[in-house]
Image 1 (tube, rainbow, N blue to C red):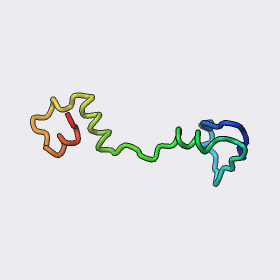
Image 2 (cartoon, helix red, strand yellow):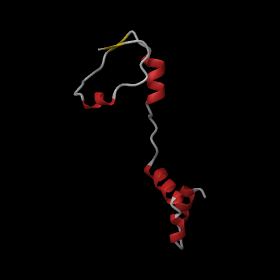
Image 3 (cartoon, rainbow, N blue to C red):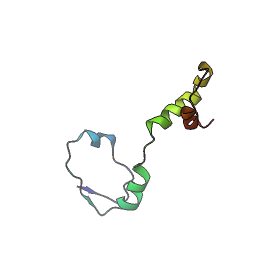
Length: 75
């Protein structure tokens, strides 16, 4: 059980615990903790790869880049 006032994060060691559930009481986790610290929309691998491709100027090493890939790069 976690009891406190304003919880904005947990210590990293909590990830190593074998927990089935955590009980929250007398705190403000709902509006603060979950909105700030949970990302439910991770980047797609294509977005990450396109960013890496552009940031490292890899387009200079290719004579032809397919149109489908150019759309992903947005350069």
